[in-house]
Amino acid sequence: MQQAVATYQGRKTARQGSEQRRLAILQAALRVLVRDGVRGLRHRAVAKEADVPLSATTYYFKDIHDLLADAFALFTNETVQTFVDPFWSRANEWVRSHPEDTRHNPVRMAELTDHMAAMGATYILARVREHREQLVLEHAFWYAALTDPRMHAMALQHGRRILVNFIQILEYVGAREVELGARSILVTVRRLEYEGMLGAEDFTEEKIRDALRHQIRAVLAA
Image 1: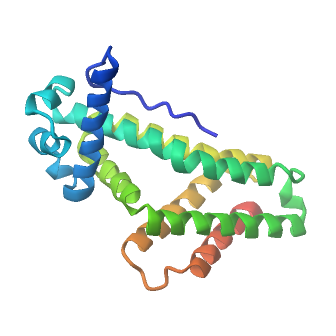
Image 2 (image 1 turned 180 degrees about the vertical axis):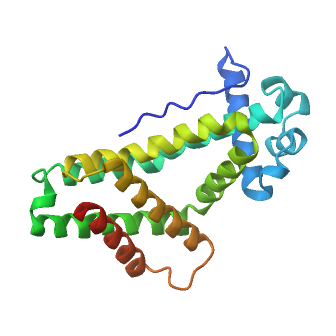
């Protein structure tokens, strides 16, 4: 389970009231990003959304980059704490309650594959259907990182935090080339989430489970 370690770049606060206002501005920035996208993120728009003077946003964040970067830090930390850590805590608890080195036990491998595919399908469906805004924000930040070199390190760090969870489970069950396998599973998860956001007709729990099962089986059998 990964710790939420994304750091903030804007002006630091010393008083609780100031920190609460700063947090309110960042939360408003996230709402603007969901509604208007990266191009709509402006100090004036965020100030209006947060119901604070324009001078408040420029006080805490000297430019749009600092505002965007700190909104990204808030988003990634909350995502890890709210969605990622709880999921992987349950997954690790189940996997580690069984013997290691699944690769040499066909029955065990089938059981693990089916269970992880079912858990993954439930997680993806919940993200798409109940927490769509989180996925919209995630894609907005990936886009922002592509267009702003100063965000490259933050985006890569967040991606690595997610990837490590896959790596740890694959290591435990005795998979080979765990990082390559982890990346291939993560790519499948992101593709399925994207298709769900676009409203693909075959975006059903059964189809998601089948796609995950196929990818996990391929990784464990390699």
